[in-house]
Structures are given as structure tokens and as C-alpha cells.
Image 1 (cartoon, one colour):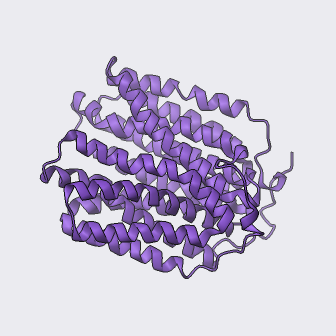
Image 2: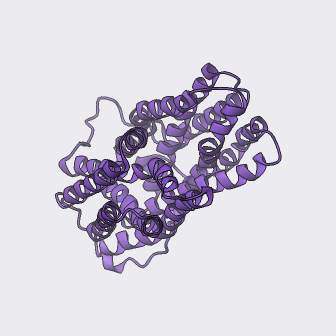
Length: 386
């Protein structure tokens, strides 16, 4: 096996003009998108929506994104990055403006469906654009900083949205998305070699194994984000929101460092302890009876989740041919979203027959699935070998 690069060897530059712009575009996109999921349900409730419609709101923005991501990957590789980004970001900005002027119940439900389709295009486009400007020997570090912009938005945007009026939420959503669109025009996109000749499949087969790993592990996040609050309530634990605070802090702190570690030791060497730590955090969660233990579980879960995401996404990108980076990102993102939805669905069905503690224990045991996928992977996981 090829040894990692010596520390004294000069590294290719990472923070180039175009890479920084791609990270900023992605951060503004995520801020604009993440303002709505937490604040729209109570706003719709004030308009007369019941629990079914509020749940439908989430489905209407998630399912279209899963459908559009593979198509986005194919379009990115065939027609280039900018046209897809322009379509996705432009559509999301227009939708935000319409919701700002016409915030009615039915129209919001329709627009969130269209927004999900555009989100699949824009989110896959920003990740692929950033990957174009990251040196392969620093792919883990580069995707770590890129994902940091996502984590920051996911931590700050929901709290911001809940602290302001719905009117300001709609205003800010449009502003963030318009700023993201404006910056997208400032990137000097790399010219693809004959992009029009790319007639590949919707998904990149060489990226399927790392994508399957993140799908299995992300199912646990679907269970946590859906059932942590009622579980804490049943145990008499207050301030459960602090779990997601320490989770976000651990995620943001770990991603850049984990990325550099992945570049040094390889993706699979980082995935193994990440999956084991994820199982341990869920095991602790299943025995939680007080806030202190809950926060320990949340911090460990954030570290483990960040490690698995960084290593699996880097591996999915490195294994794909350069002309298939769009399809590789689409494959990863689709499986990421599928894991989230399937986890909420499957563990929700389980929670209706067993206690929440038992459900989280089974969730911990289910991490044997990504371990089996990892064990069956015999391909190289280092940039210099791919």
C-alpha cells in the first residue's frame, strides 16, 4: 500500500478564489433553505394546517429532492456546472420571492414541492463545483471545510428563523438565496472535456458502496431527529434541544480535522472507528435518564456522524472518474436523503411496538450493516492510488 505523503512535502493550494466562492455559495444556499423547515410548520398551523399537512410539508420538500438529485448529476456531467446551478439557484430564489409576496397555505405546499426539485439541482451542483477545485490529495480536507458551511447553516438558520417573525423569515430566505445566486456568477468554472458526450447512468456505480454506508448510518439520524424529543419527554428530561446544540458543535469542530485525517490515513481507516463510535453514542442514548448523559451522547454522535460523512463522501468522489463527479455527488446525496427518510419510517414503525429505549438500542445494533458493507470493500481508498 502506498504510504501517505510526508508532512514536509509541499501541498497543492486549497483555498483558491473559486473554491472559496463555491463554499460561500453553498453556505448561503443552505442558510436560505434551512430557514424554512423549522419555522414553516408553526406558521402553517397558524393558517389552519393540521399535523398531517405539516408532515406533508416535509415530505413535499424531501421526496422531490431525492428524485431530482440523480438527474442533476447527469446534467452536471453532460452540460457543465453553471447551467445546472443557475437553474437550481434561480428557481429557489424565485420561489422564495413568491412565498414572500403570497404566503398562503396551498401555495406554500405547492411551492415547497417545486423547491425540493430545485434544491436537488442546487445542492448537488454546489458540491460538484467545489470538488472541481479541490486537489485530490486534499479531497478530505476540502470537503470537510465545504461541509462546514452546511453544518453552520443547519445549526444557526433554524434558531434564527424561530426567533424572528414569519415575514422576516420569508424576506431573509430570498436575500440569502439571491446572494448565493449572485456569487455563483463570479466563479470561473472549469471547462469539462466534451461534457456533451457524457451518456452515463444516473448513478455512479463506483460510488455506490460509500453511499450505501452513509445511507445505513444516516438512518440513525432519521430516528434521532424524529423521536428524540418524545423519548426525552417520556424520561422527564427538559432542554432536549441542547442535544442538537452539542451535536452541531461537535460536527463543526470535527469536520476539517477529520478531513485532514482522511487524507493522511485513508477513508476506510477513518470509517471504522466512526461507525463504532456512532453505535456507542446510540447505545448510550438508549440508556439515557438525565440531561448530562444525553449531552454526552449528543457530542459523541456529532463527532461520529461527522467522521462517517467526511470519509464516505470523500471516498465517493475519489472513486469516480473525473467526468462523473456530478453523478458521484448525486449518488452520495441521494443515499444520504434516502437513509434519513427510511430511518424515520422504519424506526418509527418499530417505536410503535417497543419502547423508545429499545428502539435506540436496536438502532445502535443496526450499525452492523455499514460495518458489513465496509468489510466487503476491497478497493483502494487513497487519492494517490485512484
